[in-house]
Length: 223
Image (cartoon, rainbow, N blue to C red; front, side, top):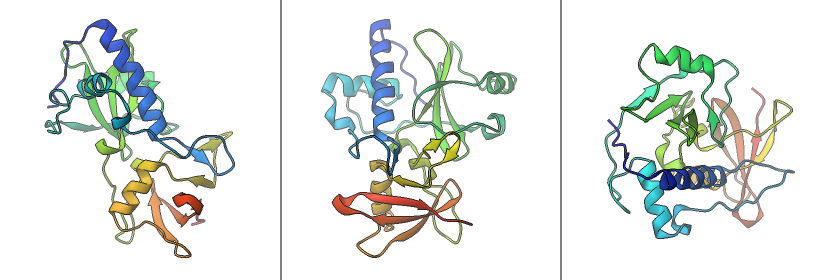
């Protein structure tokens, strides 16, 4: 079971809540090709030491600046997510229908277990209380995600990418966030000049093309 730190003061908890959401939203930044937003994404090392330790505590890591990974249980609750559920980098209240379905299974945070780790359609989330006492879903940072099983032996990188939408429709061309670029490089699927790669994101095929400056352009392919 994930080790949960519960000895934070209210001031520390509120500060960690703000830091966590701000950092995750920036790191998993969605960038439509013609949209606003920076290509850069801040890493944990850009925070001061006190904030780093606070973030690690709220995420359930062991001790200040520790690299040890605690054992945890990840609950697959995809069945409980509403059909219209969309992955988002920003925190959001857990849908009421989801709370109702999971409460009967004992899979909603409570006083004894204030945080839980969920797998929702291939993405890992933390369910936790916000400062007002409501349960919120927080999309976990890239290092807490895992590659999915794609098609034709190609891994699915969807957990490192959140589709941008325009009036509900998926934007067909987007910039890959830093987290995804790093994972493509790790898996040997980083595109090079004039040599795009084919990848899967949340079960959908995309072309990844290297652009000027080392950025990666993602174009959704028609199936």
